[in-house]
Image (cartoon, rainbow, N blue to C red; front, side):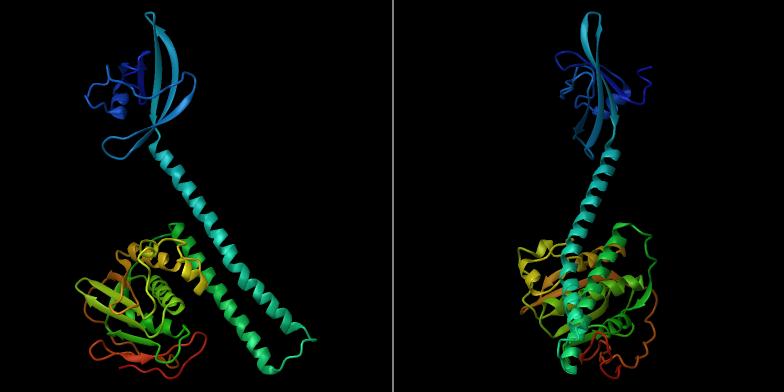
Length: 361
């Protein structure tokens, strides 16, 4: 009956030597000599108490749940231990604890980052509504613009938090489709705020990637927001096809990333001390980019730019088939770009409003 048991069973004498062990125990303990009986058990056990022991050895470490009792056989005192492999359960528990820790961290970061703009909006709205405060039209318009900017910051923070939660929930994997990279770049430049000639774009109209369009939009939006928040213009966006890959690069002329912080750059909630003073954020943007890129079969990484600045790169599977049709310019987008053959053109963009007629070469 003991030999047929699915749980491991061992009998251990007072010297810690295994006097009996069934086949299940031999598979769990895997003694170096290949013979369970006569080997040392190597773990302290107290009869009547349950304990867990961790085993190393070949393969992944395992965790055993051990229930121990004692008995006497032919005048010899023995401890009888029943062993059960609970490695998968322990890993599930660790994963759950880690998820709860990340959720708590996300809530703490959100509460901290959302408090300041909410408080500022409340104060500014109170000033606008106070009839006893004397202001001319320009001053009121300035206050309204500040409220709009703060509301936009709140929307950005919430958007990144929601994206983080969707990724954490392991929602259904997006289905890749051929996406024209230039179209997504144009859409994003129509939404960002930048001075004229601050954005340079170089991307052929047929450059395409096999990716979910919404996910590519989030990846590119986070790269551009990161460059606008922490870097110096001009910002250069490049898209090109290389072998089976489509690579997108966002290059800036800022101070770059310190060597000490480079390994943490794409970690969740990681922000350099100087970045915390420079711009608002919660350290999720680059983590979202890399997570989505790897989920799509690609990758995202950082390289220092020659002569100063940063290069944030995105690699995605190239869409199969021939080159796609040239996208039609959309009125009111206010950007210029090239076909990837000649020199780049300058483009400007403004979040919240058109900048002028669209130009396509």
